[in-house]
Length: 341
Image (cartoon, rainbow, N blue to C red):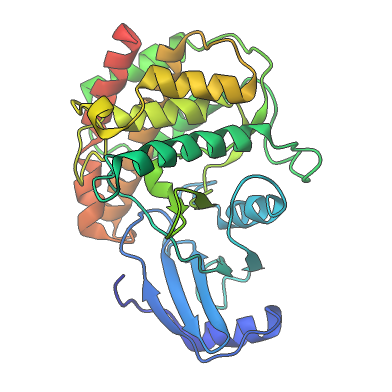
């Protein structure tokens, strides 16, 4: 974490009036990772909290939806999906300059590298199995029972997502990228027929958005719900496979070229089979489209990060430029998935 400017006096006043039991003064440290919504750890006499806010400056419409993040995590409090305890949402931009919410700080392990080189082989296998359990749990949530039936539009998920992210990409486009144009043409023209599956989806489900217990291979919190909605469950599953097809290391955070069996990590097929067993499916058709679509969406997202960096609105400008350079890489990977599965 790094020190960052946050008006903790204003935060403390607001929390004192809106969070039972809060006692200041607080000290804030900004988490170094993450590009979308600046996130801070608040240390106060009454406990440890996390504050997540919209970034300053002009923003794309519907982006940085911290209010949706707060709502979905609060709704999941008594389900099989592990989330932090939500405390309060501040919709008054006048308090610190943008909307924010506060939740409990969860002490756990976060893995940037999906190879999990710092844990034993047996624990790696167990961590991936619990990751599988959690994504299946998200897709098994009774959205009506938890009050999320209006959290997104049911049906035609991929058609709506394709239209949305083409629009978002065009709004943040800084240059013509041939690979992105080819991928856009593919996903726009080959969207599958709506099969009627509807579930809660996380929207950015991957290893580095999970917290695991310090002393067990158990997921204790799913992070970063900004892209969550009511949609098609295969989008989350494809997002996992997409990440694994990237190069290993800090930049790609993937498993491309890795001997997974020797490390105790599941193959794509094994992970999909375990998911199908947990969700009662016999298999998944057109998996290549779902993976290609996820590469397209991620390319559009990081193009937005790049544009915010150029406009001076990024949480971490240097990292924004570094991530933005990956747009054609994700586009090429999406084309590869479309052609070869």
